[in-house]
Image (cartoon, rainbow, N blue to C red; front, side, top):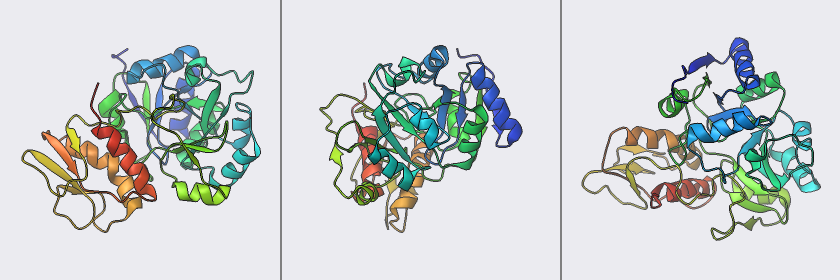
Length: 316
């Protein structure tokens, strides 16, 4: 379906009601969160969820995150436990996704979980996202609102560039604050980091009082964002570069001479917020490649390096 007129909805009560109306009719609406823009559909509607995969060109074996308006809404969908309670109390609403056993009778489309026995669920902190979710009154499956494997969107313009004509509407909520997808933690066994993201691992471990387990690349895919090649611009990406080579543009970090700088002051929070926006901008310059300065592998730098490593991976 590539001939839709994609509406741009204002972030106001009328826009939120129109988004809910489209979801109830089985349509797709991109919504802003604090992390990136999500491509939302009613998580209980098989055809609507199937359209997410179609619009993005996303493989069906890659599960989706379900967004909810409250902890009680999450408890209706998953087998909650004490660790989930501790993490949700500390970090929800916020950029944290929890993976828990799917509750029998949840009513969700099996496409959401890719037929896995677990569900990824989160409660976004963006007040616009909360308003839209409350207005709809049900669970929304929402991966990033971009063609699968490409750079994640942090503005309505990014969504429009990638998905216009394939989805019914975009709620324009400005630029995302965090700029990196949520951190994903699996709670179906020992608490395990499944994907680094907008909440640093150190904060999670402090709340848990123990180290997180780490998901190996050799382990089966159990959560979104674990594909080897992902978040990729059209240009090739070269990491840990001290300078650009001929035909390349340099994405800098710290005090370097570059085309665009993630953070001239070396602030990892600023760098995370700028990452996808700057990759979009550099990709639009049609260079041969994008060279990237070294990023410290600590705090939010772990998630930034994860995204860059996947962006630089060999393409299928």
